[in-house]
Image 1 (cartoon, one colour):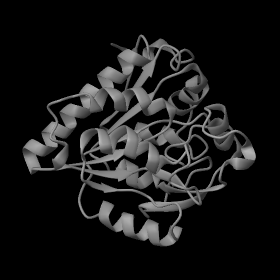
Image 2 (cartoon, rainbow, N blue to C red):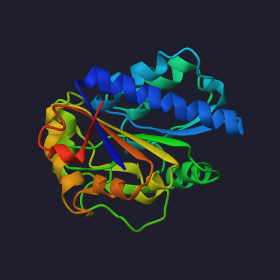
Image 3 (cartoon, one colour):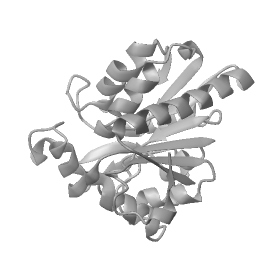
Length: 250
């Protein structure tokens, strides 16, 4: 794993998108198709905007998998991650092979169905973020570092749910679902490459905990340090608590 520092969110997003595009092109060149995992949330908006603005990517050769989704939330709700991906990635690029997690269907069936498709072949590149509680996907602390199941039904902790309110996706904590479907930690780590996009000062404490503390289920994203081809992209706000020797400036 390597940590790269950028001046601001715009520079971070552009650089992460360029790296993502290289990974996608490489996979298409070598195998004829690229399999990707897409994250959502406020931290990914500028990154996805930069990635989808690139004109020389053959999105029709890309197969996309969904990282996580709330259980029981309509696709029409502003916080729906299916809605987010449709609006910010799928419809903008014309991706026609994608696997969304239907939070309104039976969650066990969704985990099995999308999980079967996901594990059919290797994933070339995964886009992820880190939550304010250090979560990876919706694997809140203490995260399950052992299961090999591709998707899990998880219970969201209050820090995670409060973050969704603070980011403006919900108007109150009571509106945030308590359950979600999440890709497992082990499944994320099976990706050939991981690009972790983490801007903003509110993530600084989680960044320090995950990348300078112990590798622990209590800091779920710390497990990225065990992946040899992970790039963590930070801006000066999210990196402000890190020791300088930990990071590479860009």
